[in-house]
Length: 432
Figure 1: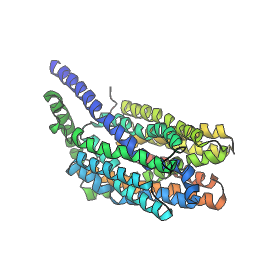
Figure 2: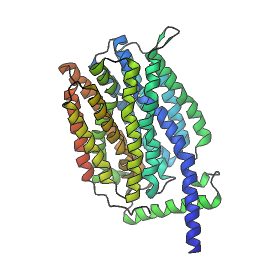
Figure 3: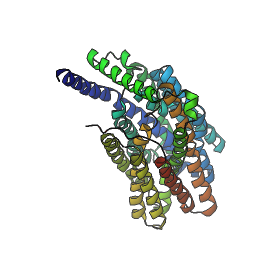
Figure 4: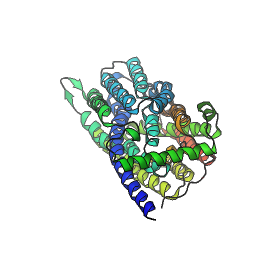
């Protein structure tokens, strides 16, 4: 009993110390990454008119980011597992920050396309690398909370970034338009943080001088025990993992979910602007509300999933709710406040499924197989980030309405929820 109590007390200390050290830094990093990925949605309020872009051109350019992103996802995740997370993350941050700044100087649609492809290639490997990196530090029982902790950055980056974007769109410093300053101001912090990453992050627990010896030994032993348990079930190789039924299903459903996600967030400011005609700053404030709801929903859903040990319904139900909210929105017409309320529900549901979804690939796969599978799921899935914005822009240009595009998004999200329920995932014991 005494030894059990000591281990429990050491484990609690280790869990708290690791979470305080790693999750806030990853959160800040992903806030900056996400701002640089989606600030184009806010820049579009002025950039489209300034450069003469149609909805079709903007939708294609916004989504083409994911073509470059697709190419380097799997190698990026493997480098975190086999080389160095901190070096890989630093390279990513510095390069994407510089490319974001250079995006401020585009002059035509081809510059726009090129900058978005380069930005996607620069950022590739960051998100799946973080998911893999968390498996170096957090047990399965703690992983959804850890994922939710850093992934709230997706929601909160827009909560913080929307008012900043609205303010920057109104400036004209040194004769440079506000939408160009938006890219400059939001690109520089990534370069600075990339340098800091080299000194701050630690690749593996055995290298962590900031952990006391007993805590370091505890987390190493816990993760080794989890690793051996996975091997007892079956130790998949990278290529076997790629052919595994659930890996293919995860990649397909993530493609559908991401199509809905980016189709919504990159077009939301424009949809609200056309529905209301309100000033840009007011639009950016309204556009931030769904992400505020998303931050709360993500943490609560991740916490409840870890508490109960259940993953599938915690991922599927938010996707069904999101599809239902989009469907309801199609019947609201031009009623602004009803649209805002339903978009808040969409934002909450779009973010709530994420931590539970990303806990799924690490349940049965270990080491390089899990790393490569996460890279595959994220790279194939993120091609939906091209499909969603493109479809909305294409249909809007031809029908002069967003309804057709929104119907496509809700269909994709509903089907993604169905595919989650087809996964063969065993329920883990609840954390008491």
